[in-house]
Image (tube, rainbow, N blue to C red):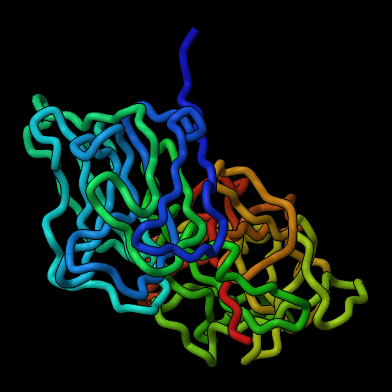
Length: 372
């Protein structure tokens, strides 16, 4: 029978908790997700100060020279010194960075390591920051261990004075998308409520859901604006939407929005509603020939969308809609086709948007941002 790797993760510190140079949190190997040849660590960190020598943030291993994974602060610049043990060196990893962290500022840190892919990556606030590759891929391997995980002080290294929270340990190498999703964790989120002004960012291409006022030709009595993705910086005129109730449903502004609920969206600039419809009479997108997504001035069931939030196992969460959530929107009246975009560009260089698929593709994922 074939064996399948099971993705597991644990938040071992929720916090935030205060740390001093002599403080130490210890987590036994058996209490962590089982790692084979990949792992990731994410955390939020605020440094007040640390001693003049190296300062330990985390270190897994039974002694100083066993260090997969490990992360220190450099002694002069408070930069990250990311290390691991290999079969050719007990101290492999990224060299000292040119720039250090600012004091008294919260950062989101992600450390990802993979022996099959022969690389270590560091992300800061969701952005790729540094990496190193194992060069002799046939000979050199990462050496994992069954020692404890130390957060803060570790063997001969003191810790730091500051705060730490949302320390998460994963038994796989997080993708860039997953790092960005983790960056928008619960401690940073604010609730989306009925009446909230929001924007949608396409996760794969980082472009905002928008319009340029171009109309689909749907006949003389049925004029609807084309919905597109345009630009990686928000345009407050064309990229802002108001969250409203589903057609025919009475809601109270300010109420929380439950996930797996049907809602609608009103485009702030045009006053039209986020809409889709079937593909009859060749009503399809210009290039991919998929289901159109439009802005429509008429209110009706074609404006209704089911909202779901993805979690780290690619299934859907329960709870309430929050800023920073990675969501899927599913069009109710066309059999829950999922809002979709990709790198296909129209003639004006904007990005095509459609309804396509069941939500399982990365191109169905959107990050919701609270404007106010």
